[in-house]
Length: 249
Image 1 (cartoon, rainbow, N blue to C red):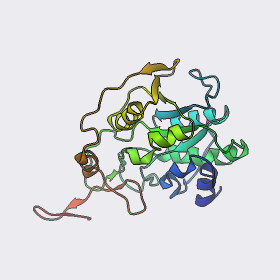
Image 2 (cartoon, rainbow, N blue to C red; image 1 turned 60 degrees about the vertical axis):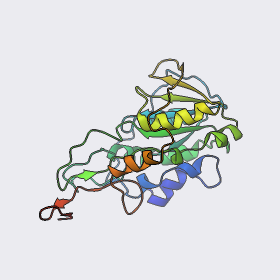
Image 3 (spheres, rainbow, N blue to C red; image 1 turned 120 degrees about the horizontal axis):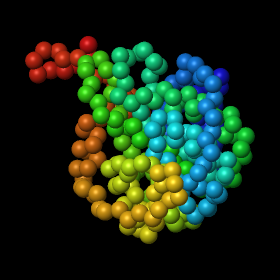
Image 4 (cartoon, rainbow, N blue to C red; image 1 turned 180 degrees about the vertical axis):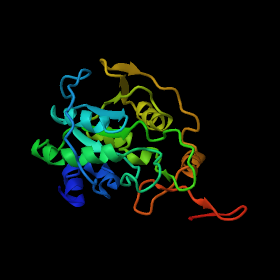
């Protein structure tokens, strides 16, 4: 099995357009075992590359990696934005977001991705986990690795337009609130938005999200999440230590 840095570099090759947004969090821990490489699905909602369109795959677990690889075969560059820290199975009693299969898929497809020899300026396909804010009522000792995507995690509208991107297609079932804040920024600056649930994409007009561009939006979201010392999000739910005090047991 390839090492952490090599796996990361194959998903984020130096000097290629868009790869500076690849999150390194998923490559900080190598999976304990890879198992069999999943099959790459056949795309039914897109048939060919559009150089003016960026894709956002907001799909559960490893589904985003699999469709990302399918898009890579028609000329898109998959950009993993996963930001929840992976811990090996059994290390903690329970994780809020199960990211093990995502990590395994990223490792399994790293060699295949580098062999595709994508163009330097291939249009991007950003990969998200739609389970990132899965409902979680953590008990002390459980592992809370929920995470959000913020506008700073993706290219700005002006940057996208400067690279020839005039539309964004979101492959998902539901536009989550955190992604809506990003998409509304794009829409407000002239980038058209379309959505696909697996069928042909349909044009979408988003309403202004609550607390849009509010100074308190990011603070309010992060307040309920747990930062990890290595980057990204993930930490144990602390054990109580006496009345009114919490710490790590």
